Image 1: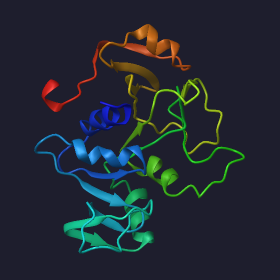
Image 2: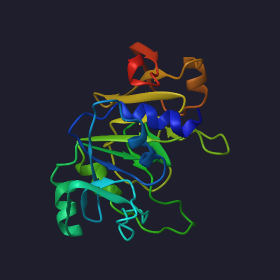
Image 3: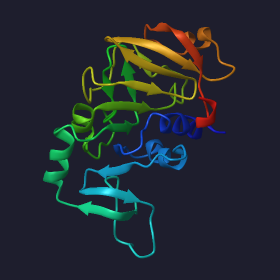
Image 4: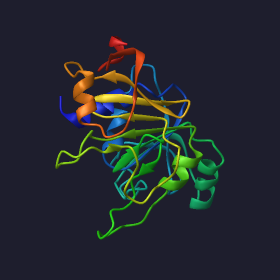
Length: 219
């Protein structure tokens, strides 16, 4: 199992039946492939949809907020972007799953730009992390150069301050509790010292630390 699949499988276990969920582009879109049995969610997209589904030949011109071809499920709704952001800002999205460039120990997120590089725009990320009831960051633990992405303090321009609920990587799961960062799960075969060596942030090891369940049956 590759890193991205492991992360997507673990994030899927945080979603509940009936949730309205917004999935960011890239890795987060894989989460729907691993939902536990009996869990049905409604996908919301900033460009004006409730009820996104897989692409079908009957709907060749529908795209999600990332510009990727998609379909819609029975009972889906379409509306303008203004109404879409009313849903987001009004707290009607139960969870959002986004990628991250950096997250720090104060629950701050940086995920929309790297100075000096071309930026397509911040999209709806700032609204989502502020309006969603639960904010899950799904990302690889380190950069391609091996540098930590979970830091004491973000160095890149922030998307939002103090809004992250949970971080899921291929090595560990962190949760913010009472404004402190807790390590709550490690991948099988990974010890706490390995996590510390690859994490720049300070964190507390939860008393109930356990291994990351890969499938819902393992919980």
